[in-house]
Amino acid sequence: MAVVVDTCGWIEWLTNGLLVEDYAPYFLCIEEIIVPTSVQFELYKWVCREVSESNALEVIGLTEQGCVVPLSTSIALLAADFARQKGLSFADAIIYATAHHSKNILVTSDAHFKGLDGVEYFVKSG
Image 1 (cartoon, rainbow, N blue to C red):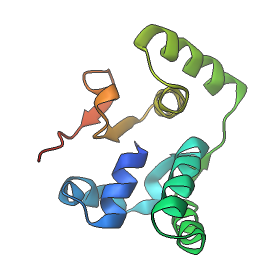
Image 2: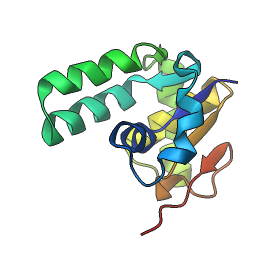
Image 3: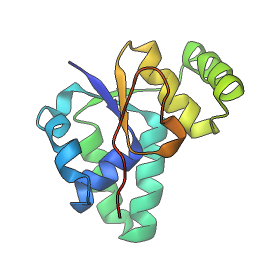
Image 4: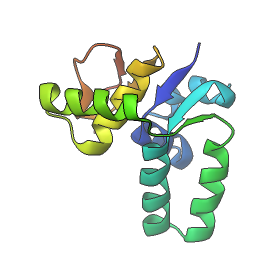
């Protein structure tokens, strides 16, 4: 089953973070991960800041092994509705809307998504 893995999940997996065991099963079949282009944006920005542009490009290469979904008009309008209804930021709304538009769950540990329909939420500890 395909899933949308939020940016925080990618970061946990890439850095062997505290929640790596929760996210790892989704990365066994990376080609089944749906990757909104806003996740690529956030990952590229984060890895450039934390490591290097060269590493950031390698990470984007990994995301390309999944199913990259660009922002379309229908996803943008759905995201705008979710932003208004659920108080989500621009990027979070696009990620959430992409999951809903593709009829897949969103896997995340971002508290902004906690309790929303269609979300598998992993609690950060520590």
